[in-house]
Length: 250
Image (cartoon, rainbow, N blue to C red):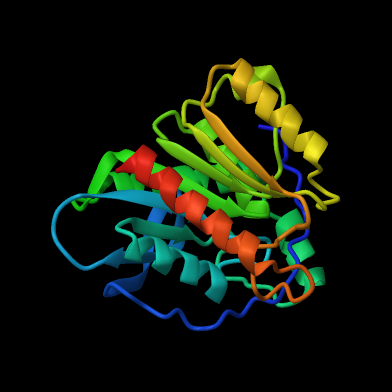
């Protein structure tokens, strides 16, 4: 698979504590990806039964507090959420290190790790293996799409301002419906890129719902992006994700 483009995600890596609703259990877990051991942050609401699940994919900063917060929020909404550590324990707090880590991440290894995370979730007795989706932001948004391109069992895919593909041969591999949230002022992933992707997916017959927020730039959903965070747009994007997963996974 060709190397995915990686874009800068603005903002720091720390996030405020989550105001919790439903009681959520969290833990760091390990699972095998080929011959390697990968870690992830697992969040799930307490209670019995089988639940839909999500592979949660971090920005170029790594598996930091903000990404863990997103996993907990999804767990509060009834999902078993697994945030995969693609950087093997490394977390960046400045753009230079984030750029170095993202550039040094082999795309094929990242895909292998995400597919292994999918397999881990599918094997859990509390997960409905037919209702597993993916969600990511920035670099993780591109990798959410990469998982859809490489895992035919994926049931839903959310891309938040992530790298896009338009090759019809690649797009044809996607079986999962797609939701995308993008910034109209994003200079890395432009509205033209988004429209081209949307057309290619529609031409392939795959359901897709994209929204471009006219005044938003890259990484507008992360409040630690002090210069670019847009609270109203972020809240709307979150609502769209919740509604989308409710329709496709529940």
